Image 1 (cartoon, rainbow, N blue to C red):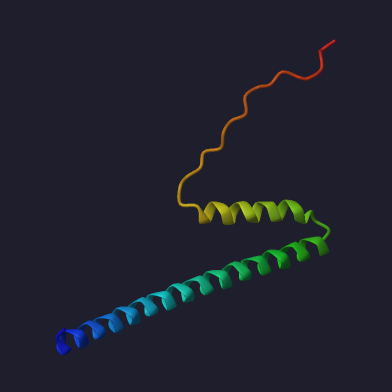
Image 2 (image 1 turned 30 degrees about the vertical axis):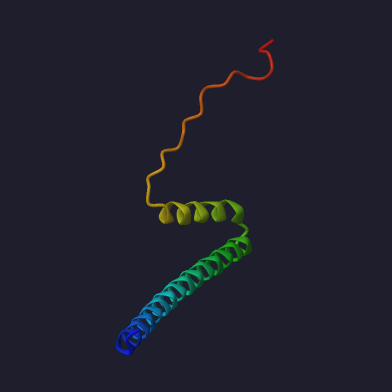
Length: 94
């Protein structure tokens, strides 16, 4: 083997490892930022729930609405809710 070829190959491997490590670090940073945003949203929901509870309002309904807004904002596809078919009553009319 030629020494120059071996050196070039080792340098190429080192450069590839460095690029991969930088990409991994960038992915980790994006993940941490996303986790921080989720934690901040949870904190805001808890604060809103506590405030509505202090005012005597139903906080569970507000929490469900907030979660639906977050889910609808997070999903990129438009979801069409299914309409429920008219069902017959379980008990007889008599």
